[in-house]
Image (cartoon, rainbow, N blue to C red; front, side, top):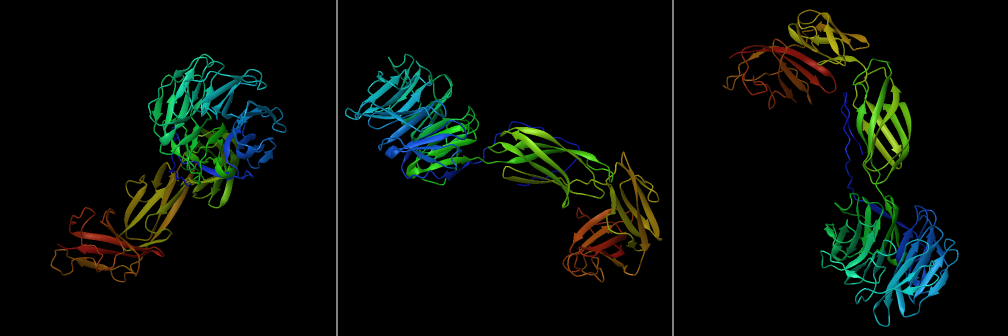
Length: 577
């Protein structure tokens, strides 16, 4: 990514701009092919995944490698919940609930009977919790609770005539939600009584996740996402870019929420759901579960042992340059830059390098930690240069390389507008045009009456030197251009642009072949017109100015330049009407 800055004395104002680029996901090697039904991360390093065939996997390096654990069962495990890195529970078919207190090195089993199949477990700490599913004999929903860390389980009153618990989400020991394939219920009485929840959709809702007692999200069929800010009393539908069935939710924080579903679907928001973005996963398998350690470390799992990890985009932009627009040769000056993280992942350190052409003039090691959407001004230090320079700032770090040309004229200098080297050859009575650069003020020692003008157009008849004094607040330089009268390549001519088809335009003898630039001036040095690729036949001057108005009779001057040689011809012409 390249960003160009025109330099002056300015600073951009930063604002909280959200980045809505499309996040991508990378596949991790789980080492298994079983359908993984749930993934659960405790922090950015430690996580677990469970699935069919009694599979339990664990990683301690963010999923770079996964290792299989011995569950002691061969049937399906549907859901996991961990209190910390060591203590966790898993539920599944045949009424099984597994518990570990040593990070999965050992699992102890409790079974509530083969008629039960548990799909969701929700622990409220290390002691209290609930597990929900169905009685496979009757088809009706069952909910059990524990108050001793899962050693014993007791039946809860189930809401209505629910046929299977798809999700169970309790905020505390008394307040929570339960849902099946058609209904959603709410309790404030530890499940002794339930109230139906009204939602603004006919789509089947599959998962609910509460961030706190008030705010939470729900997802389901047809890409439907609902949001509540009042504890579930009211739900508002948020537009999404997908129509696939959604199954899993993880809330990293109130700005960053991720939802997974069928056909490899993952959507995310970084503005609390005002805008949802479809992510790039590269697969078309169902992803029933998703988990996050924070907004930048997120995992999802699904069929054929697939585990995906978010690969958030990193995008650092230089938003402003703070420093002088020019400086005296060899005089040190300070450079600072304003940066902003426009990506979806933190910028963690890196190196800023300031280049003068290909020469490094300043290196600054950046040790900061810049979160997405945040900005910072960094003082890079002092540099000095001895000639006209275009500085470039490079940043390398976190797999990002950003090149930013500053387009900064650092040192004072001057230059003739027509003729880049001294001497400058003109015809007797021709116009010598000069243009000085880089200063705060200018003084021409032997030019026009307006000797302080930055631009000079002077009619000359004799060889002479033109000297300009260029001043800045801290230094002064002098520049001299030698002007030599040379009529050897000057052509005197006249034409009458009256439309009679005879001598109606300027014919330039000895015109060089190929690309050229022809500029016409009046006797006061004012530019009349600029013609590119003059050829005397199809492209020529017919005595009109830039506004296509005919110029008055009189003497006019012209110069001819080529890209390779610079000025090659000078001459004058008289227009007769």
